[in-house]
Each structure stands twice: as C-alpha cells, then as structure tokens.
Image 1 (cartoon, rainbow, N blue to C red):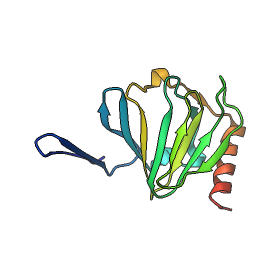
Image 2 (cartoon, helix red, strand yellow):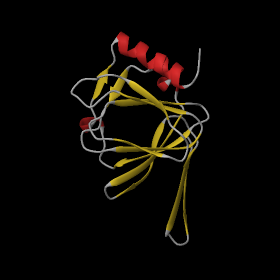
Image 3 (cartoon, rainbow, N blue to C red):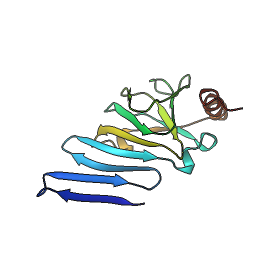
Length: 148
C-alpha cells in the first residue's frame, strides 16, 4: 500500500494520494473523513459474503474514474431486496444511514468515500449473505455491467 502525503505552503495545504488496493482513509478532520476505495480481490462479486450498514451516518461515493457497482439491500434489520447500480464518474451517490450496502470497484476504479470520522465496525454492523443473496449479487453485477 502506497500512501503519499505532503505538506505544502507552510502547512496550509495537505496533499494525499493512495496507489494500493482496497480502502484507506486519507484525511480525517473534526467530524468527517475522506477515504479512497480501489479494487481489492475480496470485493469481486462472487467473493462478497456480507453487506454492511452505517447506523450513525450517510456515506457518499464519488467515482473519479473507472467502473464501480454499488449493491443496496434495504434499510431494515435484515438484508431486504438487493438492487444494483453502476455508478457514473463524477456524480455523488449518497447511501442513506441504515441502508445495507456493498460494492465492487473494478481494477480501473478510483472512488472517494466521504463519511463521519467515527464510522467504525462498532456502529456499522455486517450481516452475512445467504446463498440466494450471494447468487443475486453476481446476477445483478452481470446485468448492470452487460456481462454474459
């Protein structure tokens, strides 16, 4: 994982970048965080085994480049009907607080995530997918990405 941070102009500008795989917070300030999400093998559609929801915050996704599929599973106590959307670069997608979700960033993808700084596993429960839900993720991924 390569993280590059520099301070320019006498500590008035911080520049961060990330060239690795997966998720990495780049800037934390007061109550908010900006992170980057890139391809990681465990988020291939056939390897996704859970969905997560954030109980205390919305989560904003901004695809800067490449292909990114977002899966939504409703906002109940358990995962509901699963839907998929292929995110378009440079549009803001706000997943509302309490909504189950997961995602597949492709190898060509760079996505910014904006969320509360205190978003953790303790306030963001994960629920394991059953076999039917796992198959639905793959089916929807193929459909929105025009595969097979």
